[in-house]
Length: 479
Image (tube, rainbow, N blue to C red; front, side, top):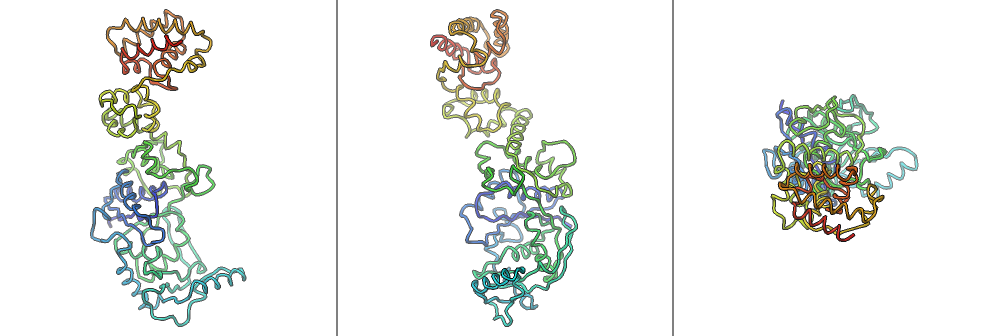
């Protein structure tokens, strides 16, 4: 049997962290088994439809490398892949139920339904529409809601993550199949689409678990074989007390990408957020995830979202790609993350800057704050010198004299490279009897006036001899 999975998002806004993980697991399962993943756009909720959301979904999946085998853009044998374009298919399946007496037109007004609901509330009993089913419903036609005629019974089923599940007849109801506007409900459309498209594994959020008995009733009414059901536990807010939401600080996947998070890091982190292969390993490429993934290793409880952990993964991937493929391989991704001052700088120089600072980056956007002084003269801030914890015991005259000594020593370097610079710095330590933290902090601040810089000898090498000496002289003169 070919394994067929699907990712079926609704185009109702930005694609968030939980949406993406619900795409990653079906992708990994399909690819591991030489199967296929279908992308299907569930756009029947027209009130919540957002223009451009579908393109954002496609763009995000492509960025992560989650290439679907059937669906929008790529096509396939089960077109169309937008539910809004499949209305005739749903009506055909709905008529099967009508002919078998398992569906009926519902002429009841929303106001009357609300009265039924209030009546149940007053009696302190659950509201079930099947208890108010119209006795002589009219013939169904578009413009009237169509409801499933349930036959209450108990169900048992196996959830591949949650285990053995069961329900009683009290949870089954006459759910709406086709709405007044002619569009199907999710409860009906996904059953039809999965059957038509040959989906073997339905992977979705655990919030759908309570509706599963109604889905099982529909499978049964149609005589369909149940697909394997895989409920994915929630991604929890950082506090661990609720499902992660927009108000909990998690940005959209697009925002993280725009902030300089790498696709490899995002994929790695989300795949491991609620899954592990039983080892201590944390860093996985997409190929490694495909090889190691298994549904039975998905945890059955919620996984707490930790943005700092995502940034840790990103730092690891920045270093991994740089170390394995070289500076140029990663530099091509930095185009939008340099400070404005780097606009006119040539690529060779920027690669040199990137090569000495990459291992300190959490995201590529850190380049903006960490590299500005490589491209323009920093503003001299003497307070930063005198208030530095390693320099505050020195007098201004001592700092001035020390800087002039540094200039003389560095001026004597014939070959301006990292090794020669480091040798000169070491000689300065011996001559001045200063601690490295004192001498090197002074030089670092004087050439950058930044809270951070890479290794001092590398920074000086990249800045160049002329620029480095000019900055040191300027600070000495300003004291």
